[in-house]
Image (tube, rainbow, N blue to C red; front, side, top):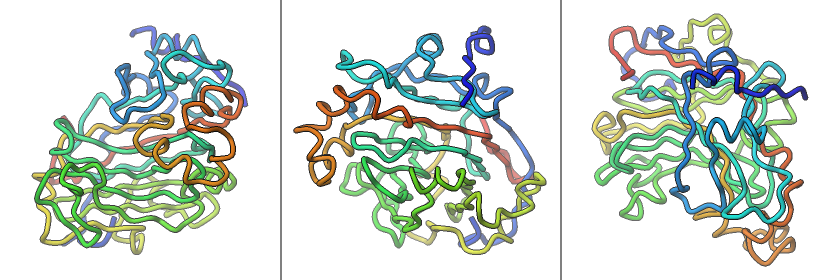
Length: 314
């Protein structure tokens, strides 16, 4: 895999529940030509208490943690440093723009491989968490084999999947495991990746997955996506128990890979394979850098479409 650093480019440093067919037009397209113009690096302490040090654009460039590979955007982790101080180096990037409703289509070639201690995610989130909501599209920890689609919100938002403010703080939220082994980690990577689509309207939040080896709708490739023709989504959050516009708003799009923390670290010892590797998640992650060589994202593109009858970006 040929890797290109990003410094020169950064130098300027869902069909169910929808009452009517939406007419989607392209609003923003992020790919290797402009991704790092439209996304910025998160450099603060990990909110999920991970054993991680998120790097700035300059630091990520120096450490070869972000750049371009195979005509795609590369987001990786430090896989050479043993016992890093404060956590293993990684990147978390978020869109500079925020969005309200619309259709987000992510064409991804590679996700971080299934590995003890890792916690990769592709998600959207609003300010003042959890009151402006969070939508987890790709997420899993350790050796998980399938993604779990989860929403987090403030009080008063419930779907058939549960209370999205559970257990009263929003930390657990409401979710649905995909049960599709091609949606996460090794199963996803073995088929060359695929496409995830989030359709977010005032009446439903729908998530679709199309494997690279499956039937990807032609209207996605043509740039004229029509979710109403795609069949049932992988999951649909809809119903009268949640006023979506008031609970989900002003979202940024995020890709990150953290380690251990509130989820991967908490369940590390519950996995018999991981438990044999080290006494704790942090000990394992700190001592085995080369095990995380494949803990990277390769993103072909992220496209954001808006319903031509409304505006979805700020």
